[in-house]
Image (cartoon, rainbow, N blue to C red; front, side, top):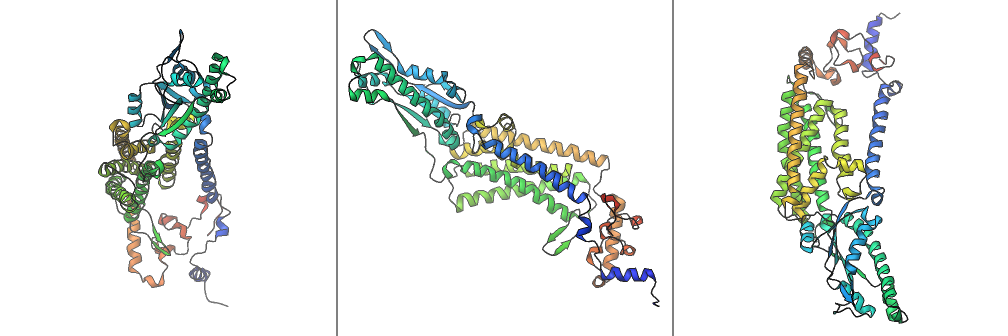
Length: 498
C-alpha cells in the first residue's frame, strides 16, 4: 500500500497538469457565448444599416442637391410677339417635380454661380447662353429680329471639386430633363411654323433642337485621385486619431500594469502602478497629443512626398489634421476610460468610423443620404474633417469653403471630450471606483516579490500573482482575494471547471 497521502497525490497530479482547464469544459458555460454572439450581432446589424443604407438608393433619397441656373438669354421678337425660350426652360426646371424634388435649384448670375462653385457650394450650374432663343428661331427658319449664334445649346458646368458622385447625380437628373425640354421646344416651334414642317432638314432639327453640353468647371489636378484624394486624406486623419487612441490606451495600460502584453508566445504582466483614473487619463491625453502630431505628419509625408498626391498648403493641412486627429484620439481614450476597453472600443468604432464613413458625404453626397444619416452628418467628425480637407486641397484653403467649419467643430469636439472625460473620471475617483483597490495592489506587489524570491525555474510563470499556497486552485483565480482560494468558479454562471 502506498504511503502517499491523498493531499500529496493531488499535488503530484497538479504538478503534472499545471493547466487543468479544458476548452470543452468552458464551451458549456454561457458567459463565453453571450457577449460575442449578442454584441457581435448588434454591431454587424448597425454596420450593415450604416453602409448599405447610405449607398443602396442615393437617387431615391436625393433631395436638395445644390445646383445653380443661369439664364443669359435675351429672348427675341417675331412680328409683334416676344418669345423668351430661355426663361421658359428656366421655369420648367423649377416646375418639374422630378427635378425640383431632387435638386436645390437657385436662379442666379454667372458670376455668383462661379463664386459658389469656387467654394464648393454648388455641384453644377445650368447655363443658358445669350442668343439662345434667337438661334432656335433662326435655325427653325423664322425671322428672329436678330442674328443667332449658331446651334442653340445649354451648358452644364460641373464642379468635380465638390464631389464626383454629387456631380454624377446632378447631371443624371438634369440631362433627361433638358432632353425632354428640347423635344417640347421642338414641338412648339413646329406648331408656330407649319409651313416649314415639310422640310426634312427643318423637321430633323425640330425633333431635338437643343444641344446639351457638359463642361468641367476648374478641372481637378492630375494627382487628386479623380476627386477622392480629399476623402481618403480625411479618412486617414480620422484613423490617425482613432488608432492613435487605441495604441495609447493599450500601451499605457500595459506599462502601468493594468493590462497584459502578449507578443507571440511571450506573455507579460507588469506590477500595477498605484495611480488613480484621473492621472492615468491625463497621461494618455498627453501622449496622444504628441502621437497624433507624428502620425498625421507621416501620413502626409507618405501621401505627398512618396506618392505625389497634389497637396497645396501642406503645412495648413497638417495643422488641421493634427487638431482633428487629436480630437478623435481624445474622444476614443475617454470612451475607453468611461466604458471600459471592450464596450469603449466598440462604441468608438461605431461612432467615429462606421457612422462617420456612412454619413461623411465623401462618396455619396449628404443630400443623397437617408434622413437619419443626413442629420448625423452634422455632428460626425469625419464629415467636418472632409469639409476642411477638401477646402485646403481643392478650394485654395478658403475659409468659407469648409475650413472654418472644420476647425471650429474639431476644436469644439476636443473641448467636449476633455470636459466629458474630466467630469466622468474624476467622479469615478471621488466615488472610489478604483481600477484596483489599494489593499489588492499591496497584495499583488507582495505576491510578485515573493514569486521573484523563489526559484523561477521550478514554478510556472503564470502563477506569478497567486498566493504561493494556492497553486492547486484554478489559474483563473490568480487575482482573487487570498482568503477565497477554496472557492470554485461558479461566478461565471456555470459549473465548477477546476
